[in-house]
Structure formats: C-alpha cells, structure tokens
Length: 380
Ligand SMILES: Cc1cc2nc3c(=O)[nH]c(=O)nc-3n(C[C@H](O)[C@H](O)[C@H](O)COP(=O)(O)O)c2cc1C
Image 1 (cartoon, helix red, strand yellow):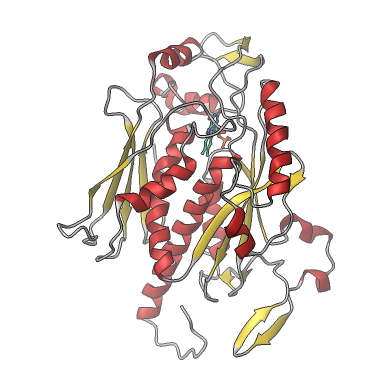
Image 2: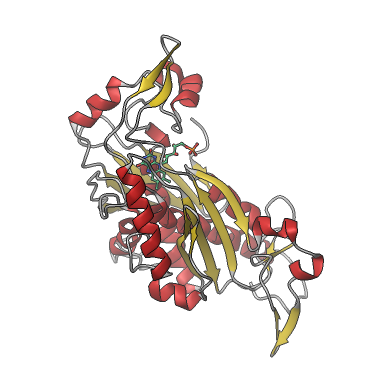
C-alpha cells in the first residue's frame, strides 16, 4: 500500500487499522519536521483525540474506544521535543470477538458505501476484511494526533483552526463570526455553534437513526490569523494543498471554498471581494474567495466546507454482491454504527487543515531563506 504520508516538509505518516491481531493492535503516527524545544505533552494530543473519540453521544458509534495516546519518541529527558520525529501511539481496546465474528460472516460481501470492493480488486485475498482495515474511520486517529502537533505549532504563530457542523439534512446553521462560533461550537453533541439549529439537526438525526438509517451533512473549517502570501502559485496552491488533505478523509464527497458552488450564479461584481484600507493593512469587504487569491492566502479568514456522506453502515437490508461466488445477495442489517459522523469528523478536518498550513509555512520559510526579495509587504 502506498501513500500513507501527507505533507512535503512537515510530514505526517500514519499506520494502523481498527482491528488487528492480539492486544497490541492500534494506530500510530510519525510526525517529521517537528521543531526542537516544544513543550508539547501527551495531554495536548489527547485533547484533540477526545474530540473524535467514538461512543460519547447517542449520535455516534457505540464502540467504546478510550483512544488514550502515548508519545513514544521525539521527546528528551526535559520533556521537550528534540527535533527528532515525534511518534504517537493509540491502542484499540474495544475489539470484541462478537464483532470480529460479525465481520467474518459477511467478509465476502460488498457492503454498500464501504471500500471492500476496491480493496478486493487491489489486494485480493489479502485485503483486511475486519473493521475495514485502512478504510476504517479509525484510520483518522493518527491524522488527529499529527494535527494536534500542527495546531500546537500554529498556536504559537497566533493562527487558530476551528471546525464545526454547518448543515445536516437541509437544516443549516446561521452565519456567525469566528468569535461567536468559538463561544458555542462545543456545546452540543453535533458541535454545531447555532444552538437552535443544532437542536433541530439532532432531533432529525435521531428520527433517522430510529429508521435504521444514517445522515450526512456539511462541516465548515475556518482559519484565523494567517498572513497574506502563504502558498505557492501553481501546483502547490494553499487551497489545493488543503483540498488534498480534506479530500483524503473517508466519507468526504465535496469541498468548497468561500462562496463555493454559489459563484456559478453570481455576477462578477457580486463575486469579487472589494479591497479597502484598514490602517496600513489591505482588507476585503467580503470573503467569497474563502481567503485565497491566486493560490495564496489573502489575509482574510480561510473558509472551507466539506460535504460528508451519510455513514455507510446501516441497520436495514441492502442489495449486495458476494465477490467470491459472483452472486447477487442481500446484506443484513448491521448493528454497531454512527447515525452521523458529522459530530466527529470536524476534528479530522481541523487536523488536515492545520497540517497543510504548517507544511506550507515551512516551505515558505525555506524558500524565503534563500531568496533576496526586497518585499516590504512580506509578513510570512
Ligand atoms: C471519523 C470517521 C468516522 C467514520 N466512522 C464510520 C462508521 O462508524 N461507520 C461507517 O460505516 N463508516 C464510517 N466512516 C466512513 C467510512 O470510513 C468511509 O465512508 C468508507 O471508508 C468509504 O470511503 P469513501 O466514503 O471515502 O468512499 C467514518 C469516516 C470518518 C472520517
């Protein structure tokens, strides 16, 4: 399997599955490019992991994973980073035989919306049939742990990344400022900052759950404090790097920046963000561009949304195909499932955006260090 690393300078490599053999099974991340002298602790990582941990609310999977992390490399005797790769590990603790048996009972069947069919075509009989292997939502544990390191670095630069549920089944949160979101976005099981809309969303999801079904939604991620000029103008546009990170998360089916797909129905003068002077700083009156111009940050907030599909595991009968017998069949209801993953996936979105930004910052600083550009505006 290739492609388990994200980043060009600040690089995050993950491994691990949701089920493995024996008590040592788990998930790990190696973070390369960590500056020396950071006082990052296990608690800083744990705080982020707790956001995506399952089994905390009626809206997510009943799987009881504690997701307790350990930092096993990269810290010196004083507890500070040494500059060596930071290694973080989380063990699986809720891998019950009853669920392994359940996976075994339908291991030859294609579960609609899951990745078995493509894994089967690529890895044949060696494909991991238990718990979806690397296609499991648990794969994102390593991303969130790596993202915690990136966020720790960004905080020191005054850059904040927040993610939250924006819409579920057509119920949309109202527009809110960054500070309003920060005040309210952890107050309900869905992590939606509009508390009135959140109640309606949760009620709707619970109705859908009772039908044995699942719900999708839109998660918004915003970044504040990024100076203008970050990103490279061609293939390594900042928005392209962020899109790469976000599109690599399972269940993400759409990405939009700023006004996103609405630009298709706007006139130019409505779409263009008009500049003005705020003291000695250039600002923009609107943010249809989502904080980017020409692939670089323009100094406004980064605003990106991801469309999250309904959790594929359902408690209803679904048409399937037995891949070994090449026969059509029916997949029976499956019990352990998330009615929606919106309330958890935001933490993964935050992590991927934070990693993309730290990686881009390190690239920018590396380039700047060998350039002699007389640029009085340069902030990065
Ligand atoms: C944080 C997270 C948790 C997830 N949890 C589940 C889950 O409990 N049940 C499930 O069926 N799918 C879950 N998924 C979605 C599947 O991993 C994903 O839909 C599947 O691998 C197919 O990939 P695709 O949707 O990108 O094609 C989760 C995804 C993420 C990112």
